[in-house]
Image 1 (cartoon, rainbow, N blue to C red):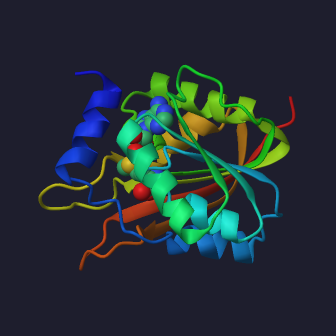
Image 2 (cartoon, helix red, strand yellow):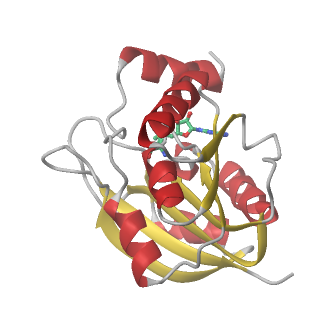
Length: 200
Ligand SMILES: C[S@@+](CC[C@H](N)C(=O)[O-])C[C@H]1O[C@@H](n2cnc3c(N)ncnc32)[C@H](O)[C@@H]1O
């Protein structure tokens, strides 16, 4: 099964524990407290769009991409009923350039962490860097391997794996052990990492 079919199947079957139906509090707090200046923003692997919609409603000009056609279709509907202006594009970020670059801010929640090898994660980080303008910011959220979680949970990444993948292209501004914003009683632990693109 190709990757887009695999993700489409998840959305079709409703097996989408990450899809909280609301923006993640970690995004909101980081944007407000850092603060992240209003700019062109890219939501990578946007899913059904709650984080993109929040960014658009809070002064960002948003482009969002996902390789599930079904997720993009749902995101467009949600944005239309929220009256939010976001441009949702179907595509594979690992292989296609997203129009609208350079961006000032890239956000991903659970997209980077779906890549299992250091080679793929390094490629992902390089792609993020190539979509950012000078000193552009990337906030990524991923499952935290320090949690010994019974049953199914998100893919997990160690701090060492994260740092090794992003360090060549990014200066880490903060690395926080948090949890995913979630409707679950015991939300999975997450790394939230805010980075600035290095100057070449
Ligand atoms: C765990 S889900 C998270 C969705 C959304 N960010 C959220 O928080 O609800 C990961 C998403 O990344 C998308 N994705 C994975 N690899 C991708 C790629 N190479 N390009 C674009 N989207 C991708 C999947 O289709 C899926 O919707």
